Length: 298
Image (cartoon, rainbow, N blue to C red; front, side, top):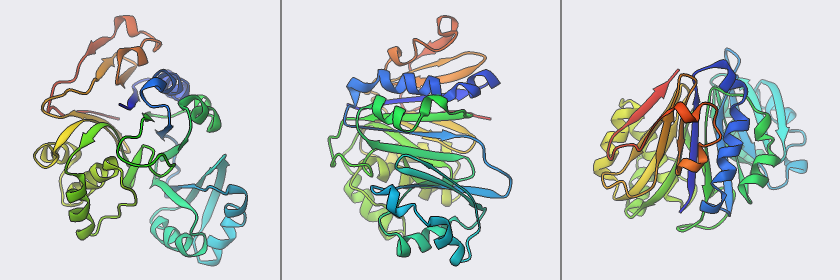
């Protein structure tokens, strides 16, 4: 089942209301995925800095003294913003890998949700409305964002098993469908040195795209190559620092609809996720073609 949504801003007005729009879209998809939810939002980012988004089951303890732990290891921390069970650390660009290694040793209970100049990922177990409210999504601004409501079919209902998955800086993936060969792909990707932490097939797909892009392919090429390597049925919505892309498998049995106006591009598993967007009555609305890559960027 599962529901996926995405919104790409073309105007300052949509950027200012990005969180409010995405929250409404996410909540509308609740019946497609009531056990957990998450979203990636691309916003802000100071020159020369990167963000590391962390999650903790015990934030009062594990976030306490976090800045000092990193400073003692020589990692410069510009700011730390704690929102419920997540913390966003702004660090010097190029130091997130060092910070991650330090935290793995000093605070092993922390989980890295994302890293990059623009991306922030928030996800938790619970109804989409609860997750949206916990992280104050409706108040956030951003250039673009993707979201997911999960109905677990292939792995446990956990925070780490929720979407989005991020396996490279400023890159994330949400997914509706299933891949039948994800176990073989997971073994091959781990052998190639890719970090895969869960049994979720979506994380495998995200790691595959990161691997292909590290080999020199751009996102469109990586998505097209995956059409030959993935075995299953799926709709992918991929976020990058500058935009997002959509791909459906060659059969395209999973539902998907898109809308575009002068102010935005929107994606939803069903049209009802888009009906409250401004100007939707005059938008160009269509169903993405099978095995076709769509991409928008700033």
